[in-house]
Image (tube, rainbow, N blue to C red; front, side, top):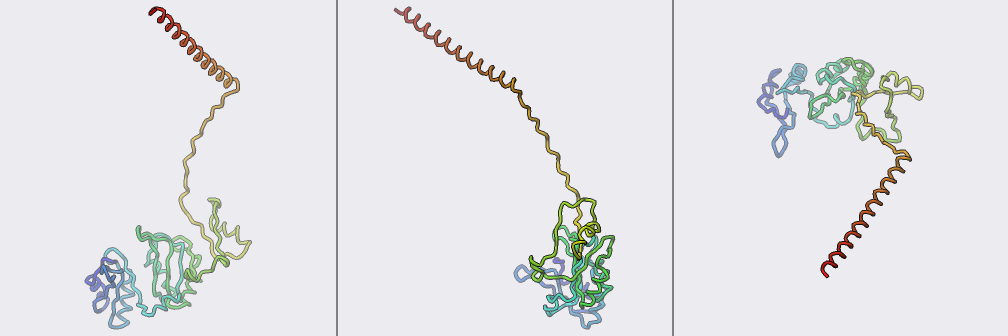
Length: 262
């Protein structure tokens, strides 16, 4: 964890064998821990003992991962022995993934990818073997097998910049398939068109949309419309007649008032 300092790491690293104080890597400006450190044991046997006995030990509420330091970056970037595992159960952590895949060879690094905010597994991970033979053996034995009740897919890891382009892309996306279909039924429907490398159906809760309210439109009949028009015309005529009568009355009153003055 980023909050760990040299003091608790020194107790942790010397629990398996005597070792010099660990070196916690920090950022240059804020001097904040980058989340990893190096421990230099006096001999390889002590380092191997620490790797076997203290890997995934809890440090301040977070399980640590211990692996051999690779000074040559080309070993990490070569992709040799690196495999990709997907469709994992959410409760599978780094240790369970390591215990499952360590049966097929020496593992250099093993990780389940988790969400940074929630800490929950995203359902996939990486296992880096020391040799390609161990990786091929793990793929052959575990691809399509059930791990904790869920069928996993295991294959060689391919970097984003070396993945096939759009012209040679062989992945198909389907939607609006029946809810009762499973992966076996989907494979059965599409196998007649060619060999299928993998099939996966994303599962989730079905969305329920609220029903729209019905709008009732009342239409008037022809007779009702004519009757309404007649009533409106009669009202306008009545208003016009009233106005004319008021005008005549006003003129008559003015004449009488004038005669009275004379």
